[in-house]
Image (cartoon, rainbow, N blue to C red):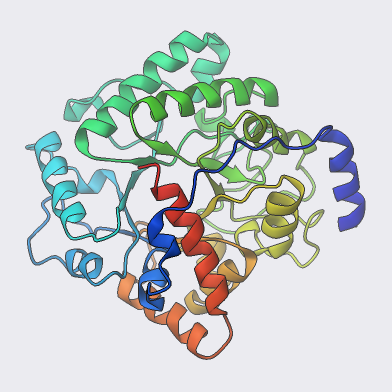
Length: 372
C-alpha cells in the first residue's frame, strides 16, 4: 500500500522540488568539540512554567545556562495582565542572556482563535486564516501578518508556529476548519497566503513553522484529546501547500502532526512517530532537509498511547529534530527540560539512539539558527 500511495503522490507532484539553497552551516555545528549534552539540549523545546513574572531563580534559567534547552515557548498564561509588553520583554531578555547558543523564543500566533497576544493586553487585532482566505487579498494578509510579526520582533520573539497550511478538506473539523484555521480548500490558495505570511515574518526577523504535516485539515477528531485517524478522509491535496512552498523557498521549518494515516504508515504510528511519514514522505519524496518540530508531545494523541520515554525515542528515530514539551496540556505530568534531556542521553548511552543521529539534528538546528 505504501508504495502504491507514494507512486500516486509522485504522479501528482510533477517536477522536482527546487529547494532554495540552504545557508552555510553555522560555525557552531562544525565544532568537533561540541558536547553530546549541548547537542541534545538543542533538540529540546519547553515551556517556561505557569508564571507571568519570571523570577531570577526560575528553573528554566538554570536549564538554559546548563545547555539543556534549545528553545522556549510562551502561552497566554505567561502574559502579565498588569504589564503585558514590559514583562514579556523582561522575561525574554532574561532567557536569552543565559543562552550560549541563540535561543528559539517561540509562540503560537496564527491569529483568530490561536492567538496569545490578544487586544485586551494592548496587542494588535488579528484575523482568522479563514477570513483572510475568503477575502483573498494578499495585501490584507500581509497587513495583518506584519502587525503580528512586528509585535513579535519588538517583544523579542524569533519563532512563530504559523502559518497553518492545512487544507480545509473537512469544514467541520473541530480543530482546524470549525475554528477558522485554514485559508481555503484550495491548496494553491493556502500556499499563496501562507507564503505572504512567511515573507512578512522574515522581513521582521521572525522565523516560521508550517503545520501540521502531512495534513490535519481532513481530520474528524482533535489530536489534543486523543488519536485523530485521517486514513478514511485524507486527500493528496493536503501535501500540495508544502510542495508549492518548498519549490518557492518559503519554508523555514515544518511541524509534524499527531495524526494517524495508514495509507502512509500501516503500523498506525502518528506522523510525529512515523519514520515512513517523516523520512520517506517529507525528507525523501519532498526532499526537505530542514528542521522538523514535533507538536506538543504531551497532547493526548501521544501521551495517552505512548510513555514519555518511548514517545521521545520514537520521535527521534522517525526524524524529528526538536521535541516539544510545553507543559500546557491538562492532566499531564509536568516534565522539565532536565527530565527530557536525561531520557535522550540515556538512550544514546545505551546505544538505542546513535550519537550521529543527534548530531544530524543539531546540524539542522544550527543551520536554522544561523538565520536568527
